[in-house]
Image 1 (tube, rainbow, N blue to C red):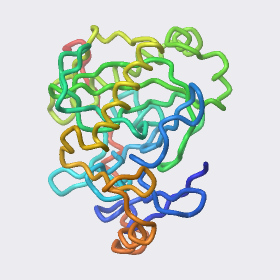
Image 2 (cartoon, helix red, strand yellow; image 1 turned 60 degrees about the vertical axis):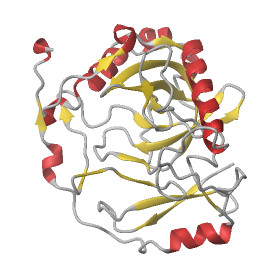
Image 3 (spheres, helix red, strand yellow; image 1 turned 180 degrees about the vertical axis):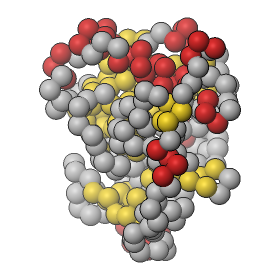
Image 4 (cartoon, rainbow, N blue to C red; image 1 turned 90 degrees about the vertical axis):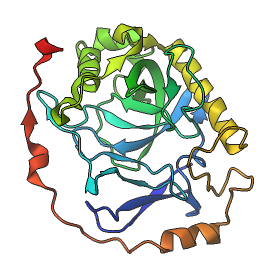
Length: 288
């Protein structure tokens, strides 16, 4: 299955939304309609943020059809800071469809409840992807970040077509073939909110990356919670379950889905990005 995207609203604005269509040009929800697995051991990753970019793009879990849009805080578009030496996001960042970190359940590994989102993925391959790309990845491991008291798993994965993919099969292979990359990943997640005056993020397992087997179990758990969500045996939590392929009372027709998209403004070129986004911030790591 291949997927295309359709832009609505002005780029780099609060109106911007990126909707998804399948190979038959039918509207779909990337959260609900794209399968979790592409094949045995291979997962579909939805790219929200391309590597080296700063705009905090994310699946809008509370909007019908769950388009990708830029996060907004206090009426302004959100960008992550450049925390020296890291430029924007240091991997292609996104999510696994048909997963849900349940905010009603306390995770037995971390002691914290889920963050009400699909599970996050850091794709560490060489190619800089585009927002809205659907990439087939294999899972290598996971980092357990605790974000303001909530469990926020970060899956480490690689595009199966990447030149290094054959050499990377578990988390230990990353350090062997990409020395320093896991350390940089841990540091990035620890400090990226600090320029806003927030404390350093915390981690379960003393910040240790867990292996592929552990990560796969976490993905299976979040996939189970997504099934409960769609069956409404779990609290919906303000999420939009609107889909066109999954089935159930939240499924809408292609005509209805097209109408949802058509209610948004036509695509257009928006304002230039504020150059303050390119500012470098220097975090005093010795004080952490």
